[in-house]
Length: 69
Image (cartoon, rainbow, N blue to C red; front, top):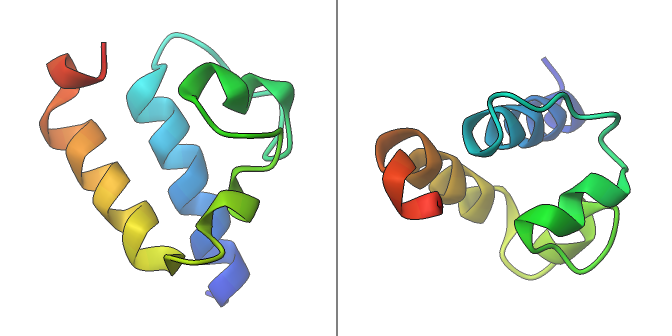
């Protein structure tokens, strides 16, 4: 599994945890703005904090689902 593939899978998992009843149209999509990202590509918001930040968001989305509402 490549580094890019890890990012893609983690972003998809984050979407699925936050919006389990809504299909994501693509990893670059205007739908990401519904979650609060600045633009259609959430990867650009991780420039300064990296993959660890994405892992943390995924942890909280999976383990504390009520708080994301």
